[in-house]
Amino acid sequence: MLVSIAALALAQDAALPAEARADEVRPSPEAKGGLSFLGTFSARAVTTDVITTNPLVNGQVIGELGGTNSTTTGEDTGAYTEERVGAFFTYAPSLLDGRAALDAAFEVDFAFGDSSYGTGGNTGAAIGADSVNLQTRRLAGRFELLKGQTLVVGLQFVGDGVNDPSRSRLDDLLRSGGRLMFWGTEAAGVAMYGKVGSPSAETLRYRVGGFTLYEQAFADGDDVSLAVADLQLAPAHATRLGLHGWFLRDRAGGSAGLLGSGPSSALSEMQGGPRLDFRTAPDELSPEVDVDIGWIAADMGYNAALDAGPVGVHGVIVGNVGKIYVADHGDISVSGVLADVEGRWRYAPGDGSVARIEALYATGDKDGDDTYTGVLTANSWGIVGAVHATHGSYLLFPDPGAINRAISVVPDVSGKGAGLLAVSSSVGFDAVPNRLGLTLGVAHARDASANVLGTEFNGRVSGRPLPLLNVSAIGAGVAGTDLSQTPWTMLLSLDWLVFG
Image (cartoon, rainbow, N blue to C red):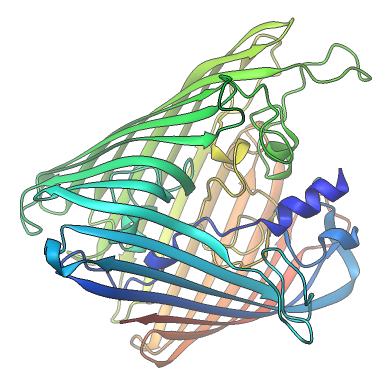
């Protein structure tokens, strides 16, 4: 089991699409031909009391702090430095006037001094280096069949809204649709993105697609697949209304991947999702579990990216319904609801001079034998399959800037199936607009039964010595957890966006 966890951790990948991380740059679809490049460089020096109790996962680990990933808090202080470089390429043959392109993205990340002369992702920075550690993030063909209608075929980023991740800003993804809380990962498949109207007078956007999440045996029907359909309307200035439907068909019996898949899997438990136990006795083997699950969502935003004024708001409500088919047990009904709303106010000059508040509620399971009344996300099927990223915290909820050690008290919005009540807020001020700023934040979480999960207080000082180069000093601590020690972290981070 521990060896499987180690192998899984080595495959860990960030959920957020790195090509959309900086609001200053919107990757342009207007290039008529040639090779374009976007690169991301991130480095972090971290001091923390979060430790791993198993040396096999030291350095690369994801999921719930204090959970099955062997992490906890200790009296000793640990320190490490980690680095990630992502390279995103698009080649558009000039012969086709930019109407077809090949997208490719690769990544290398490691902790300083971790290993050398080996093979595998997320390592390779010990003396001598010389590791084979290149990871493929994207590999897809992109075809503009009609004006404003783009077909993407291959390995690509899969979000939970209408925006094409390779042609969008971070706000476009995090503040539309499901806000990446349900789907925010890579998958191989086909997606069509379309829009009607000009950029200044856009009336409609849509996405439809299908993806193969697991293909286990070509001759058998033991696969996991996902179908998506999303629509967004622009009825008034700076206003967006969205309707979304996603459907997952799982016939893998819970056995896909290194730690299994689905709501009864060790993978789901490790990442803070539910682990539904359908055994009739503790010494029994877990029965095969198949799933049909659909999500229906509606979202509304006004100036969500703060493009058209100082005030913006976005809200979404998502319901998941379906069936879990348990061998020799019967069918389990699934019904759960999540609601999230966020408001922001840019009250002074500078990108960082923003006050924000966000509230989230997800229903929890009532422990019924024939029902599951909680929320399910892609974290039950994939490694960092979804991420809650707008909360502004670093330990209570997942830190979207983490490289190899993406650990938090509440890593999934299902709250381990017990539901979630969460409020987060932050206030930032740019002492020198867009060059030097300070942000203070607080976040609080409980399960749906009002049991306290933790309260985080954090602060960040950020500077921009060069365009697109950010340097930050960050501190955070979480009170009120069940852990033996109060989780805390201090870190220095450097983030650089390169394009050409």
